Amino acid sequence: MEKFQRYYLSFLLLIVYTNTIAQVNCNAVEGENCKKACELYNWASDRQGSRESQEAFDKAIGLCPEFSNSYMEKAVPYLKNGDFVTWKILIDKAVAANPKMHLGYRGWCKFQFLRDYKGAIQDLEELKKYYPDDLGRSLNGDYHLEVVKAMSYSALGQKEKAAEIIEKALASKGYFKGMYDHYQLGVTYFELGRYDKALDNFEKQSKENNFAENIYFKSKVSKIRNKDYLDLKKLALMTYDEGKTMKDVYTHHFNKIYRKQIEEL
Image: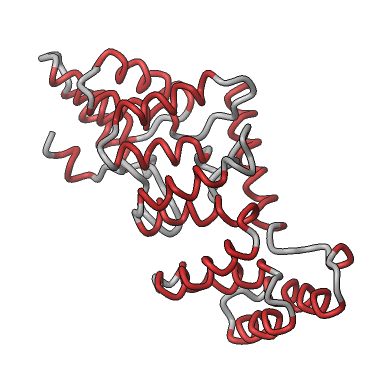
């Protein structure tokens, strides 16, 4: 029941966040032009990606350049369409206008879309100045931003530091566990050759949210230890074919595994 409640709440928070992040209470915005910009923004954000919405964001920016949400929301379609150059120009303007609001989002996108791991770490470290106790979560709800920072360090070869960050997060009071925390920690320990620690985390992941990638790494540990791993390999393939894998709507997860890798084990 506890596991169900945790993931249900994670899903619910993501739905609420996705449906409300764009809307702003324009009555709380100071200045007549900025109120008008806010109203345009609210109208356009419900029509994201259309020509009309982009034109409305441009009008909003012209009316109130310091209203950072317009830059952010105007940038989103470029990110989704793979125009990262235009996206970065716009999101940088949003961050410059309101770093407290947009640094976490930019850091997450640098990690997940651009694979700019140094840039992600830099943004998330800067965000800590505004939120020293809790950086918040990734936009898709899968990870706490501390874990995003850890994965960035891992990608840069700093595995020990990555493991330390995730361990600290998991041990902290009130921490809201992500979908793949134990898996990412397990992979990090696996890459460090610390197979007991790796397997312990893969087992914990299995109990919370099992998927093909996690089973694949459990089979790798068994193979390295000269134990029977073929049943786990078979289970990983079956689980993969059932669609129980790490998924993201727009990109591929860090430490994502594909069927061919499982077959070649």
